[in-house]
Image 1: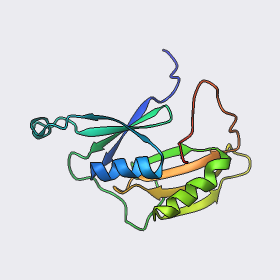
Image 2 (image 1 turned 30 degrees about the vertical axis):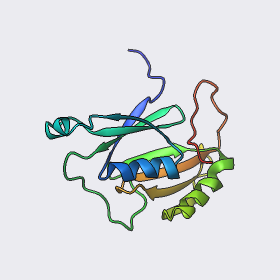
Image 3 (image 1 turned 180 degrees about the vertical axis):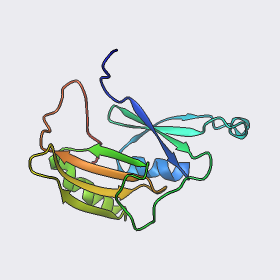
Length: 155
């Protein structure tokens, strides 16, 4: 069996696609990429409706949830609940992420420090507009791998 090198893409279910695209692009610095199946006939037949965004070299397919999507309470900013996605930034950019969240009025928890003997430094936790849990952290072992870009764009 071949070893897997990396994650290429992931899908995130959302309630409001335009709102999700704005959040991931404006707040997290993603770039719009591609829209798929925006024909009414396709949607009525149950064909997936999604728009993808790019974060560095990573594709996130934002897909409209096909039905009820149980989400956590509004006040809960941290957890797994089956809808959690983590991103890494350099330690130097970590404060910029918090400032950007504040400037967009996004509530977050943290920064929370991780155990000193582990690879993670600090994390902040928040949710996207649909209620998916998101985490941004910096790593103590952040020596960049020249073959892979691992960081979200926050400028």
